[in-house]
Length: 317
Image 1 (cartoon, rainbow, N blue to C red):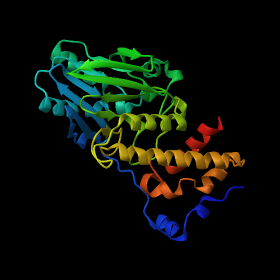
Image 2: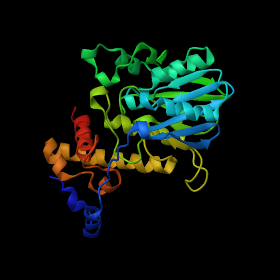
Image 3: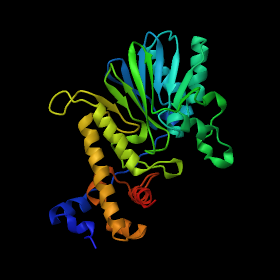
Image 4: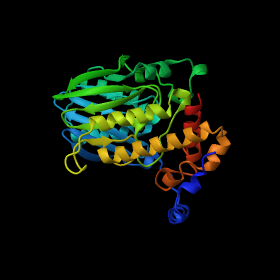
């Protein structure tokens, strides 16, 4: 039997970890919240709201928005768009995955784009996003159901799709079985920016949606792909910018640290599974203990216990 995780840590490190406060999840009423605009680089901006982040590209072709957050935030998003772009010619929306905090504003923003430009808004996503949005109510979660105006109009099924917009090549890269089974990375090649959706969330453990095809190995594979794309400028600083689904604007070194964390916890859980431990025994061993102060949570929609269970179930299949 391999040792309990507590035996892997020095006494000083253990004391520090146990004394540190756990991360807390703060809630905010979207109706009272603001959408903040952070210039990233090139012609790409990061929209920071109470339900996560979106990436916005502005140029002579029009508006390209990666993720629409929730429907009640659309008026605030529209205000920010109006501040950055005058008389847009065309709207494109890209959904990184199906969850409503990233796609709930599809219909309202699509209608807004059509009214402003007279041109239908294109909504791009992997076909698994379309499948889940259009599934009968008894076969999918109600929160992923949108009216037809919010469905993807350009569903791709190959490993990637590329478009040219606002003078920039943009690659939309499918990451199978990661956060969900329909995740896409969006790489703005000229601006040197990658928008990750919920594959990368630097302020919490990866959310692995097992019911919608998510798996821990797919998350790690996707993080490795981000690292292969990203190029630091000097001493691992600067260079490619990474817009996460939730959390702070990041660089390659941040993603490397996050990938290492996921890999180490995966390997620890796999070792405990190989020793014949049940889920309850693995959770009691606390294989994520030395990372809990940075990424963990004891309450909220995604706790440390839920993360360890998702890793366990991913590896036990």
